[in-house]
Amino acid sequence: MARKDHTQGEKDIKGKGKAKGEAEDDDELGDGRVLLSRVLVTGALRNIVEPGCKQDEAVGITQLTNDVILPLVNSLLDVNLGNVVNRVTQLVSEIPNDTVPVTGKNLQTDHLSPAERKLERVERMLTTVVVALEILTGICAGLEDVEESMDEDQGGGEL
Image (cartoon, rainbow, N blue to C red; front, side, top):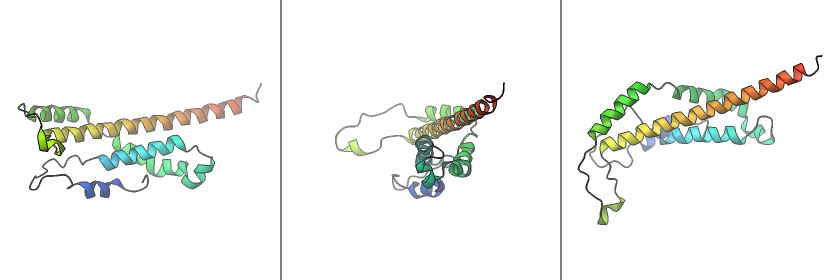
C-alpha cells in the first residue's frame, strides 16, 4: 500500500456515496481518504521497522524512505495556507443556517450540505499534511541521532 499510487484509489471512490444527479463542482480537492491512508501506512512503517533489523530485510525501509516516503511527504508540503483560509471562509459562509433535526427513518443518510462535505475534505487534506510533517520530523530526528552517534565514534578515540 505504501508503494501503490493513491490517485487510482481516489478515482475509484470518487463517485461513491453521491446522490443521483448530484454534480461535484469542487474537483480542486479529491476525497483524500486513500492518500491519508497511504501516508498513515508509510508513517507506521517508519515507526515499526528499524533500519538493519530482521523486518527491514523484507521491507527495505531505507530504500522505501528514499524512493517513496520522502517524495510523497514533500509533495504534500506545498500548501498555500492563505488560499486554504480563504476557501474555508467561503465554505463556512455557504453553510445553510436552517438545519432541521434528523429523526425517524432518515438517520442513516448523509445530511451534510455540499459546503460541509467540502469542509470535511479540506480538513482531511490538512490532517494529511500534519501527518506528513510528523513523518518528516521523525526522519529528521533519526538523521540527528545518526550524526550524533557518528560524532561520538569519531571523537571518542582522540585525546
